[in-house]
Amino acid sequence: MTAAQSLPTVQGCSATSCAYNEDSTCHAAAITIAGDNAACGTFVEISFRGGVDRNGVVGACHRSECKFNDKLECTASSVEIGAGKDVADCLTYEAR
Image (cartoon, rainbow, N blue to C red; front, side, top):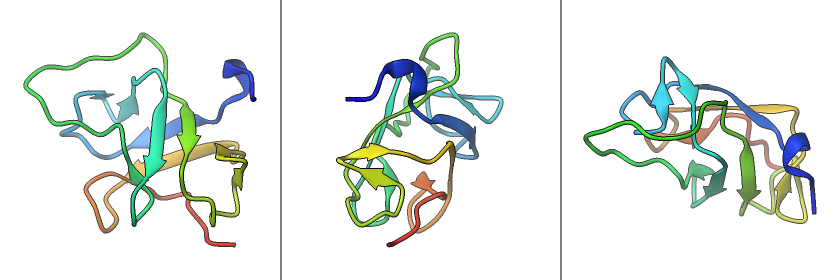
């Protein structure tokens, strides 16, 4: 298992309607990438903002066919989240 300090950061997020997004910065403690389109599984629209006082990191990736996936953990140096096929997709995703 990867130490939390070495998990890839969410470098930017353009899903401004997400409750964890503040000034295009993710503040979720750890996001999960999942779904058919490498969607941010942590994306949530709600009437208030939440999260931690640091940038979010990728805690888990369920897209095993991504070239950055190693045993369900992301090995990219950082990721970008934004509109793809869904409102909040991992734009760093690349098929092997």
